[in-house]
Length: 309
Image 1 (cartoon, helix red, strand yellow):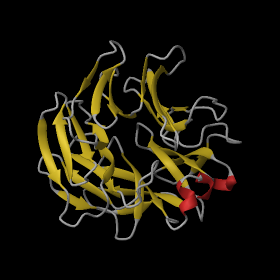
Image 2 (tube, helix red, strand yellow):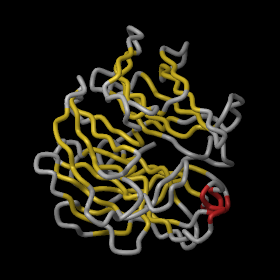
Image 3 (cartoon, one colour):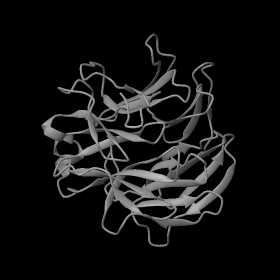
Image 4 (cartoon, rainbow, N blue to C red):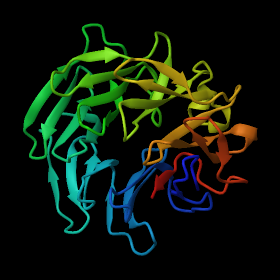
């Protein structure tokens, strides 16, 4: 696929004909583009992470009962979240715990330089930042009146200065929606970016700037859309975390978008959508908002896809 700026990237996805257990809940290529982490799960609690080569071949890593929460820069180590956090190595098979006993972790993300991990716990009263040995670097306490149940969708800006997250107000197993916030990693200062009474989810940073892309859901009252993506009504929005200026990227007129991914050059966004009552992948160029349909007749598993150079 090509963007309006002439750059070419490859979409990575799992076929809808996959016959294993569960469905694809997350998929993330390694920084070197040679491996991909596949997270399969279902509503009955099954969870399986598989580390596989992008170009095919035998899996090089596997973990049951946890959630993939990010690659480290060497493309060998990755973060697994169960009730606690572990760093696993797909080359050596080594696994080591980095969070203390007695904590139940609910979300986590690796810093861009791989030297720190941000995570939240089930109480939802703080965001914790630790180094890869488990030493506490900073605690960012929740506002005195919490904006939601707990922070979810934790994601670091590419320069490591900001962390974005959604204060979950829905407590849905697969997707979290609520107001988008950011925290400064050096000072702990926090601020809300979403307008009041908006439900944002799937936050993801542009690798070239402090822009955050979110899915803004418009039919929170329809709980059937929590799991039936053909019923989701939403649009993609972009906010500049420095100026707090918002811009609507899509105008889907009563249909939905989810699982957005920036292209590495920041010029376009790839996402899943139910436009035309078909679950397919699309590309939208950020500058002129021109759309390009990438798949037809729903050939891919509907929850997520990714992009590599």
